[in-house]
Length: 336
Image (cartoon, rainbow, N blue to C red):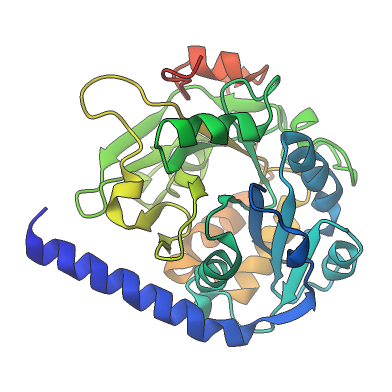
């Protein structure tokens, strides 16, 4: 990359950080327990709206993984989300009435909280329907991964989003509060992915899976991006650019091996497709707060009229992380 292009990216990063500082005015503290945070704690950051039914298992999963403190931005939920999180002793909660879209789809709020509280910590930025899976996650806490990353001088850890879905119609099995969503959405596409390199930011851009196959069969280029970099050893000079798909400085996006080897990577098991999804999609379409004039949610709404089945004869049933590594969807690299 040339000097001029590098300079433009530095200016862009500065602009996003200034914007995040300004957008802090959007946020009203409901409960701030960040004084509980210790130097080596792993922190989780999340923006959400009306996800009360998912929260008990979400918190249980990430507590078991080793997350020490949760920082939530509640975008004006009406289902008790905010009240529930306020009662959790390891959660800090902020509330905003402001538009998700005007905050760069929540990333201005996340960048501010990461700048304020994430500096020097390993931070995990995820959505409430995403479950982080990494090599040895069934036997090693997340601190084992971050210790190895520190020892290897690696500051960011990449994942692919793996869309999980049920066998049968999406609305066929009711989801109960506190339930592991993978008990219902236990299937995934083991192939059917397109990968290309983003020349400007250096990250890999991945599309495919059931969302491209079912919702964007005639316009695959419009299918959602499946690449994310959710786990980062945060520094106050960093900024997310577009969701957690890419960061600045640009070097944080170089999470793959350009010389033919394999760097360690993980997955985000994406459990969007439960029986709660049609109502959620309709709500989000009405709000029109999502990327590109909500093209993704318009596609969902159109297809969901027929209660589609995402399962097909090539679907694989999820077993564990080792299965995902064998299929080439994640890698332990040289972490043994």
